[in-house]
Amino acid sequence: MRRICVLALGLLLPGSAPAEAHRLDEYLQATRLGISRDRVVVELDLTPGVLVAAQVFAMIDRDGDARVSPVEIEGYARRVLRDLSLRVDDRPYALTLTRAESPSWDEIREGEGTIHLEAFADTALARGVHRIRYANMHESTSGVFLVNALKPSTRAIAIRSQRRDVQQHGIDLDVDVATSLGTATWFVIPVAALAALLIRRRRTTVSRR
Image (cartoon, rainbow, N blue to C red; front, side, top):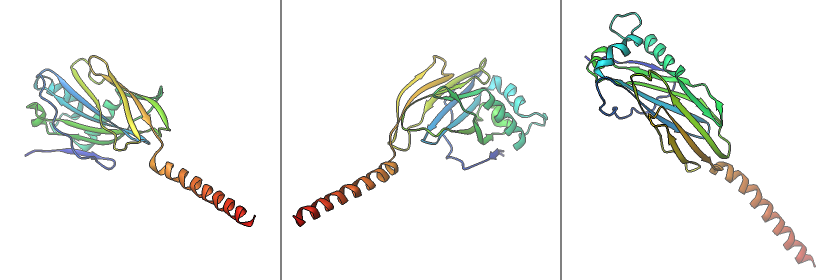
């Protein structure tokens, strides 16, 4: 029977597709970055190959009972977060864990189990161009890395460029944040009202002449 341990600290996003096939001696680590006006979300899928499965599982299963408890997967997730870095406009941001999910030992041992982690940082991106830098240095010796940015859910945010290092430990993003529709609406309404008032006064003045 499949056994999953889940830590839920907030609203969960839908599950992602399984990691791509990889070599038996690799620890595949695939990151997706979600950029919004007020936060950056990091989704991380960790898939150990058969030859490194025992090593990875030992880092999770601290009491050695061949099972994963919520406390153990949370502890490992926080260890992973310490190996991640996120900077916005050269300012470092701490990541807050919101999800940690581990498959069973049987799945990990067969190279079929993927550990799912999710975290976020509150960033409050103002209007203009911002530089976002992300790096993952967790288990860099056996790790094989992939990193991508998700398409923003609003047209007010555009990713202008993406630059990755050769091994894809990290990515640099140039993000353009425009005035949101709500902000623009609140700006246009008072201006339109003022213009209408001036036109009305002008007409009244002309009619009195």
